Length: 153
Image (cartoon, rainbow, N blue to C red; front, top):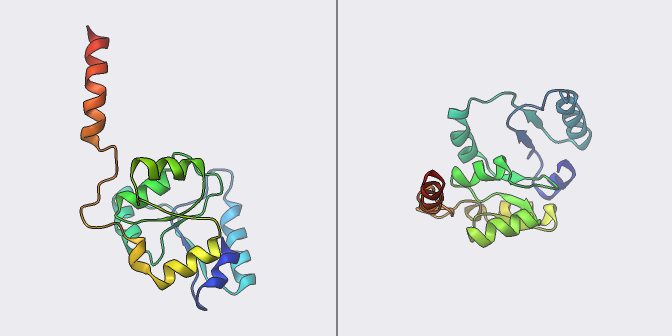
């Protein structure tokens, strides 16, 4: 991820919201050291209260979920829920998301190219007003209620 920042203007860096998983606390400093070596700023925020996350996700210049092997990602879905169209690597999960909710993510094969494109057209990193990912809560309830009714009978 950090090496791809060379596609962006000087001074653009990485802000990673959240904290490393238990037992991986050293990763934050390793990431910061790698960024320093590349001359890029890097901040790992630490714990974020759930109530603040949507506001932060909406404040990002470029929404990126750079996980190489993302699947059922809470981070990707958090971006979508905040009205953002995150950059995500091509994967089976990304294809599944797009099949269910067309246009919800920007799939990339090359992160540098995707970052440069999103920097040039940041409007494309936002979902249209009124966009609703599928299935909605109502869609899910409509599918589950008959199953639950049969199970209860």
